[in-house]
Length: 205
Image (cartoon, rainbow, N blue to C red):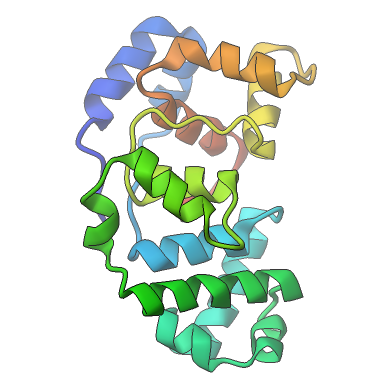
């Protein structure tokens, strides 16, 4: 598993600027890691949409059992009802096969995404049916290791910031975006610790 090279610098920077973040960093010694290839990261993000980490891990395990290995070829070979029996909704099964189809048709490799600016990658991913802004953000964080990604629509992020900084009061997305500027240029790292605060298992896509 590959860790971001900027992590030590980022944690030191955040600790100096934010006492709450400093406490989280001291409490949780783990780091963000890359697990699997780019297709698997996208697939995990699709699986994990709007469900808990524990539920997503359970669905992923059943998906691996059905596919052998989660690859574009293996996903395309599984009938939609088999994907659904692994725990995917009909729409998630369709999204997963659509992404697999694009990977196969365009012969996409991990190097492809690494060889271009992130904004180009964002544009291309959003053009694939089934991939929305949140999935792109998860891909940027967990596969590309972009250092300054913020996801104001993420329910966990909303909950953690409200709990840690606003006494539990809900915060609007625009206010969250403004609030997150205190963590620039390492908002990815701040996000990871916010998630870590909420769940006993580190988030990995």
